Length: 268
Image 1 (cartoon, helix red, strand yellow):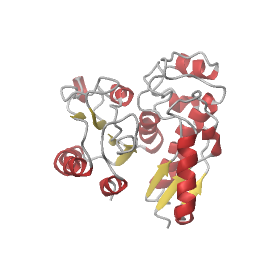
Image 2 (cartoon, helix red, strand yellow):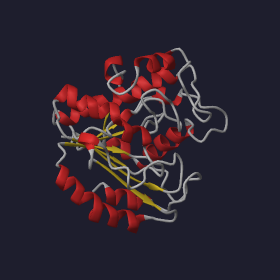
Image 3 (cartoon, one colour):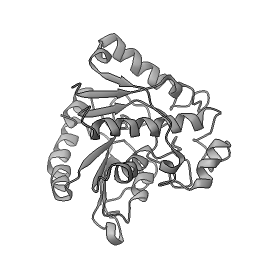
Image 4 (cartoon, one colour):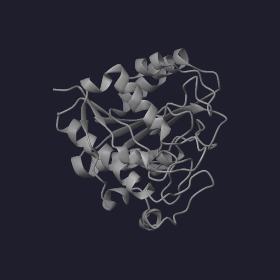
């Protein structure tokens, strides 16, 4: 069995955030070129993403909001604009994650990496923000529960920004554990340690804000000393990684100093 699955489609190049926007198709072009030159893709099984169903998106998002994306009239913020291809891209992005989940749950892959855009963890139930339109990780967690009967899901988020949308989707839900390590102070201004869930979900949100300048050593220690015990307590049946790589030392919008080796160490 091929250990790792790779999910990608050229449709993700078609979402247009505008000239000079940092969330551009060049991110994926550079990734695919790098993987091709290194021969990495030859060792992976690749699948083409399907479009997610509206029902799966509406487990997290308001139906009128999703319809607004289709009509290019959804609630957005200044940094998050809708282009003609955005709707198809977000359907394929979430659908690709769902297809990867199906393969892993069926035992046909051990893990999967979904290379898609636009990203998702800032998207709220009825608002696009932070370059995000549909919260793919939140939709995936609900898909695991509804489609595959997975009772306990963990979502781990190491993006330089706090995933406000993912946190809010499960803030009262004891069946989904949300962990975020992020730079603070930074956009969007949420993610303090005091934000730990409420009601039945109290204790299933764990935020660890870090100052700028942290890198491989700090993240590795944090994962070992804080995240591992938390996961052992929660006992998830499935783990989703919301993997933003803007903690990399070369990222122009972040202030962290992670390296490629540091990212590798966190996933092995």
